[in-house]
Length: 164
Image (cartoon, rainbow, N blue to C red; front, side, top):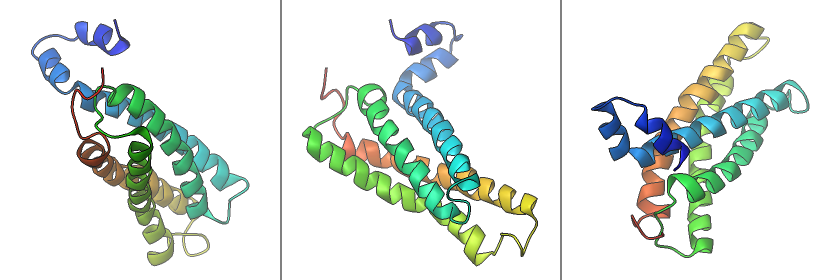
């Protein structure tokens, strides 16, 4: 029995039925939460150390590492039964979709830093860090997450029940 099944057995009805119906979305959310933590930890580590003057570069590196993790977890767990493509084609589409999502994810950070000029010395350090977090980790991540879920089901793993 899987971890998700064990957890779902503890949830009362009718919520259990809704969660079972949307099990794939629930798994996608767990993978997303996991990779969000990976992305956030790496982003802030890089942004406060070796890439301090380059926050957008730090965000790109962090997102790339989280994306590789996401591919493995989504393919083997979230969309485990979906498929319909050869693995190399599937991987290419996954990373293409993720590249587009990376642009969507970093755009709010770029806008807050360079268009709105929310950076030291034009604003306080606290305002800069809060702006970075809200734009990159909240707004950017939400936009990219919605796009990824739609694109994964539509293009990368298009056929339900394609794999056992």
